[in-house]
Image (cartoon, rainbow over all chains, first blue to last red; front, side, top):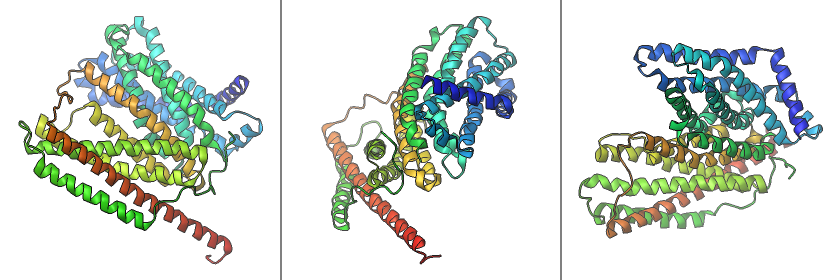
Length: 223
Length: 243
């Protein structure tokens, strides 16, 4: 199964490299959200370190929706699922492959988006960057874990992907609250000491939904 | 387990007939009336809040019914994926619809009470906020059912019904912590109930539960009839009698 997942990830990454439009759209979306926040709240942001977390996570979740909504399009169009089944690939492997792909794409977006936001708001804290990377990774895993199965669900509706954000955002609330809390603690205090149980909650959220979606995925894509 | 075909599955259980529906309706209706009379004339006035406190009976009983409804959807969604009988899918969908009605009542009565008791329409209390998120999740469930492709509708709705319910305790936990880190303006706990209040409260709880069951039974019956009509239409189309 590990080989199957690896094969799927490589296939998807190759597809993404050959057509940069997906990742470009994700990045521009994230950047626009950040700019809208700063244009909208610019003069009244008196504590930028407290606000930066919200800006980053709203930006990342909007850009995640763009990436997720496309992740199964190609499989339906090109009969990918039938091919995977013929190849004897486990449905869970297909799911994990898509999650990894979305995590990689979102991390690439975050790699640019997060520093840009921190510079715009002037809250760059070099000492906290490693821990910030951990928080971003865990949050992005949560986004992709739930988003991965819900984009497969919404790809089977008449409007195709238009339903995704309606289904996704209510379920993301715990992950987004915890990610914002951790980010804020890091940017304000430089450590996770002020984050309390939030990082643990985020970890639990990631694991629960990865496991649940892994088990349920076969029912979503069966024919 | 190999996935089986999502469509053309067996009906499984049958909804109750009109006779038992009528009987259930009388039982549920009478208990709703009894609880209303008790709330208005038997339950004592609360010392500080006065008459407004009486909304509490309706509010909590509706919340109880809504959570029961969504819990049943969760169980029926799992049962559908395992057994593939239409009955589970119909009950899951019907329960969401009825649950959303109760959930809406919770969200409407909550602010009315909060305004009178606490001076604000809305507080980000864990229970109230979780109910709002719950409402959003299950409106999403209905939207999904409405727009999912016919032959895939049951399976994807069941998956969403399961994932959505798993989220509920996590939402509650996260919002409780969120509130405890910020200064908590109002604490909901610690409402002492007098024995008479308690009696009225439990009768109302029971009445709302019966009323929920009654609505669920009707809705299931309607859902089963809808699908029967659908099947008949499909058969006639395939026989060529309808162009």
